Length: 158
Image 1: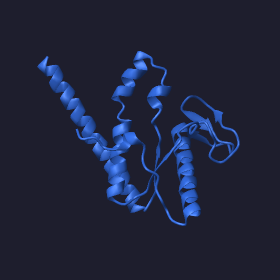
Image 2: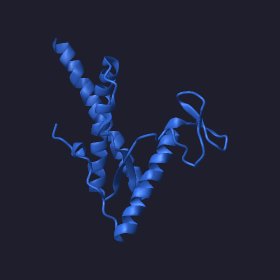
Image 3: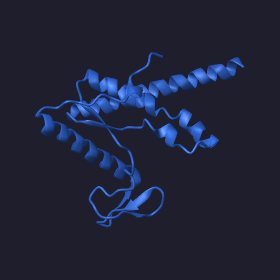
C-alpha cells in the first residue's frame, strides 16, 4: 500500500513540476514579445462533459485548471495581460472566413485549400477572439482594463 502512495506522490510531483515549467515558459515567451495571453474559459467543462467513467478519469488527470491558474498568477507578476475567451467552436470555425472541410478528427482544410491541424485553427481563433476583446476594452475605455479571472483561477495553496 505504501508503494502505491509513493507512486501517487511521485506522479503528483511530476505533474506539479511540469505544470510550473510549462506556465513559466509561456509567460517568458509572452514577456519576450510583450504579448497578450489568451486562455480558454473552461469553467463549464465539467458540467458539459458527458459523464462517462472513462472521460471522467481522463479529466481528473488533466491539469488544465492548475496550468491556467499558474499562467495567470505568473503573468500578473510580470505585468502581462491575460484574457479568458469562450472556447466554443474554436476548432470548428475558419479563422479566415468561409467553411472548413474536415479531413478527419485532427486535420481540416481551410477555404484557401491549405490543410492545417485543428489545434492550430483553435489557437488562431483564440488569438483573434482575445485580440478583439482586448481592443474593445481599449476602445471603450481609452485605456486597458483587464477583466477579473474566473473564480476558479485563483491559485490555491497546496
